[in-house]
Image (cartoon, rainbow, N blue to C red; front, side, top):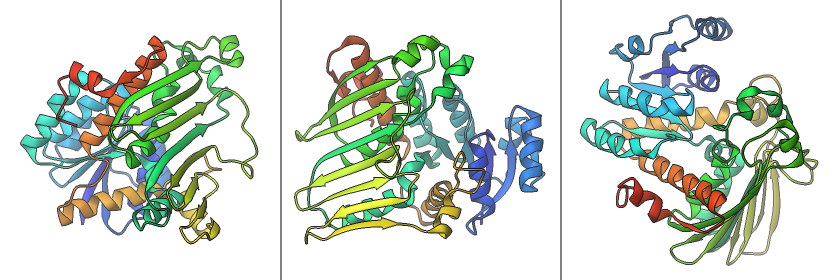
Length: 358
């Protein structure tokens, strides 16, 4: 059984639960710069091997995998250190926040031969797993277009000083989920065009960047896709629409996967219409903590998938290159918001000498 160490115990709380409840991996050590958080998590999970020193965890020869859940601007350095220590790596999304560091990480992974996986957790949620399975089995025919959104009533963010700083952007935190769905089904995006605004709620609070956005994507083969997000106003009842959904429209059918509701709808190529809900046991697997503020089931799904990839020697996706490609697309979206013009992905990749790398 492989051993894992977890760095960053905010979101890392979910992976602690995932590892402890998995038969495929052993939680060896946890780490956070804040000792009080280490103590809190240790008491919560009755797991008392913790440290505030990342290097101590890296020096543990028994640890095979490092799972990283630190602030975005620290990801590149923490991934680099883990690879240099000879560890396989899981890193939460977005993989990095600075594409100037991407080439070094790609080269380092090649040198070490270690696997790197990006924790785009939404792919591993039950409705999206079923949607992907149906798509691969041809249930809706060939894909025509994809639409995805993530809307949330995050007005409480506006009470936080960090959310009012110039560096805070919902584009990278919120929209990275639906953008990942776009790349999951249309990996060869060529161009993106978007518009954004700061809502009246955001303006009143002093928000610096867009809280409401709509984007259109064009793939190299001409197919198009759409992503939307709104974060500082109420949302409609979940029985009407989910906060986060992915819609696939095919030549023979269509499907929609809804996030928190554990709901999946499909019109099959035979014309059959289905709406599937998962019951209490599945809900308890995914949502293990208070309310639905923290969840862990999808983390356990991707953790076990990554362990399988190491033991069976296959590539687990999204890998490093795919993660970097998603960050490049997010930067293209950001540039489109600022310029009001379409942006080609290849221009972003060229700027960082990444053409041909991702």
